[in-house]
Amino acid sequence: MRYKIPFNKPNLAGKELSYIKKTVELGKISGDGYFTRKCQEFIEEKFKAKKCFLTTSCTHALEMSAILIDLKPGDEVIAPSYTFVSTANAFVLRGAVPVFVDIDPLTLNIDHSKIEEKITSKTKAIFVVHYAGVGCDMDKITKIARKYNLFVVEDAAQAVNSRYKGRFLGTIGDFGAFSFHETKNYNCGEGGAILINNKKFTDRAEIVREKGTDRNKFFRGEVDKYTWVDTGSSYLPSDMLAAYLYAQFENLNKIQKIRKNIFGYYYKNFKSLEKSGRLKLPFDSDSRESSYHMFYIILPNEKLRDKLMNALKEKDILAIFHYTPLHLSKMGKTYGYKKGDLPVTENISGRLLRLPFYNSLTKKEMDYVIYWVRKLINK
Ligand SMILES: *Cc1c(COP(=O)(O)O)cnc(C)c1O
Image 1: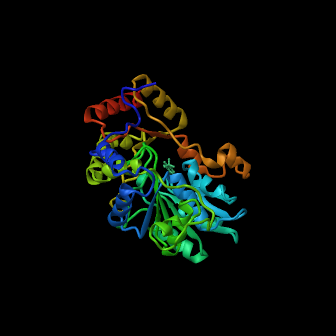
Image 2 (image 1 turned 60 degrees about the horizontal axis):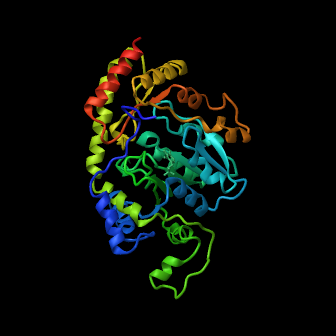
Image 3 (image 1 turned 90 degrees about the vertical axis):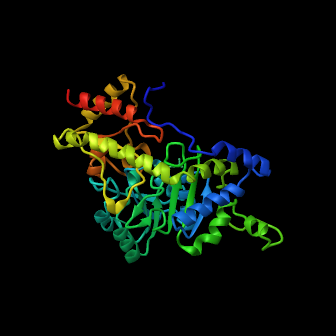
């Protein structure tokens, strides 16, 4: 089903196709080629990350983090339930148990004031998610982590080029994970990156990412052959994908500006609906400079949300909602969670609606969406 105004649309920012061609001409289309290095250097310089490795996805960057901090069966990891499944699966794959914490109704990020009560002697890490590109309160979270000696992993899938008090998200915890999936701000179809902010993990990260071998040391001439030295998998993307991604990075400021304008235009035009109590607008604050990954509205209840979503479909506009809270999913329930455990998460997930948002979204298209949202909501 194609919509006149789809929810998302990938678009070329500049030299993607000629850069892909260049990888073929350079004779190296596997991982860790010319453009992979360019992307990694870009992330390290622009976002001031100590070390970055491109990965095949954000999911894989999160999995790598779980391997690097040596999570074992029975360890507990604190995370929001209001998130994409990969945030939890990354550590569940290692046998760790998710301990879900409710969200703050203002930012929809993990509510830091509810973290401490969930910490036990088995707690090993906190996986936070910067929802919609707005940073969690990292000062508070870092303080709790220090107090209880926990690792912090930032799922910054939606927060590439977002800041918290001036620092880029993904560079504050022990690890940060970026997504370059087609639906994200800067993309290459499928892709991600792990940011390593705790230097002691860099060497091992290189090995885990290369199937558990010291192949990179071999390429640098540091060992005369490479072998199996650790657990690991294949987490490096083709250089063709990195080529596509680098072309997007070259347009980082332009894309940021476009997204900020889209967000601002929706915001401005829905302000009066918020004032009259018909909906709630997303969090926006200069102290947590966002990547403007998405624009959502929060309706008074689930029935109105679903009604609006379906009515928009009839007008050829695809608006969608997420997430089914992880604690109420089939898997979540196997850990003993039930309805009522996380009231804010359950309440918000039934009322949130995401509007079409992509870099090539025109003012005319936005006007069409705004017109119908206003009209349908006032019915
Ligand atoms: C998109 C997303 C992911 C997964 O990213 P992939 O690159 O597709 O693996 C993980 N967490 C959050 C919060 C996301 O939005």
